Image (cartoon, rainbow, N blue to C red):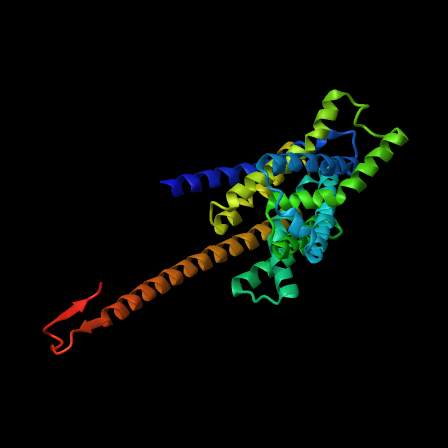
Length: 334
């Protein structure tokens, strides 16, 4: 019963996290007339404040000391902070500049980019279905490049920056809340310095646009931290295959917002490119689910074989009393 409740809570947390990330294009335009860099700086500053409060409430400080004695991990977290800054900043600019659909494409092709990076950087071997998915994704990008008249740079930079971020995070192997704390701490002083400079220049919107605008800028920390915490709660309660399926909620919601709410253009060649990407993701998802099922079957078979072997070995441990025939006085230890 407890396991069922945990899975239900994890599933709800996953839906909430990816749902929030999918609806975030509705939030960034509310922060205008602040520019993308100013919004990003506020996001870094206020996010550190939110995670610091959470760590204080949860009393999760013990990891800081050991981390400070690991320069390699600190360096990797610095790289993670840089790549997520590029990702966040470009995404905010894209949404507020009318490129929601192109931004959503970046997160659609992100799994394909992650797989390609695994092959190129980690020497991983792909299954035939994965090769087919990656090849289809490459064709999709080419089709979209023709449709746009140029490569979809926004999508590609978002996909590659987030894939790099995920690769670095995998090597660091740190919890989401702790990692976000370090990443925002690395960028806190530059972000705060930029905001102070804007204030000195008289171009800051923090206090010039009213209390509501100030509250919205301050809420960037909550908007950043809450989905991440919900994602962390989901990741420890539901299978990775389920997480992999839920992640498509975000770009699907963003795409629908771009088309139906922001009324961005979708000429035929763009539909064709997106269609190819969706085909690639369907193939990739099918292959992942099939592989996960095979692994479960093999693991179950291995456990059954181990149990049978153990039972056989136990049956062989039959003690025969001295001076008696094996049939006269045997004891089977079961």
